Length: 107
Ligand SMILES: [Zn+2]
Image (cartoon, rainbow, N blue to C red; front, side, top):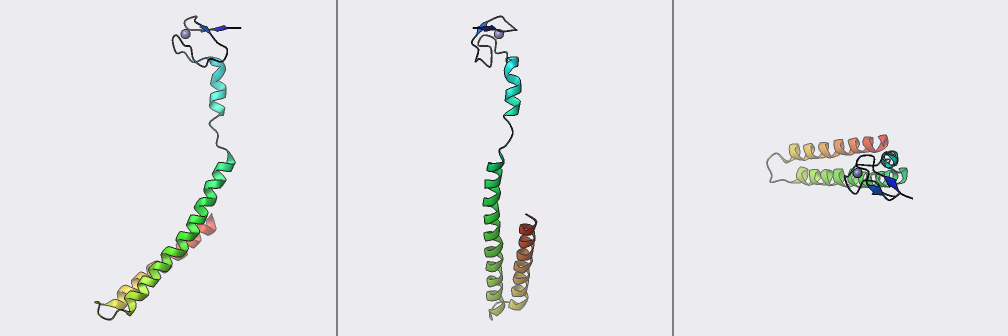
């Protein structure tokens, strides 16, 4: 069994998606192409879990490093105005920590 191109009349195989002579797409395959563009839920869930774990690690490690750096700055004697700098770094670390925990809770 053969079908023929509506545009140029070229004889085509049944599985053809385009006319091999003029390149015209065949109407039979238009609907099946549009339905194949939907995402599967499993892939989305996998990426979501990976991001969630990354978020937890980053939200715990980064602010902790910031607070440790702030404490080091705070206790340094020879630096100019160490207490103000240390308190500033600790405050940023705590704010980032609270923000990241809030974002994780919303996820
Ligand atoms: Zn054709």
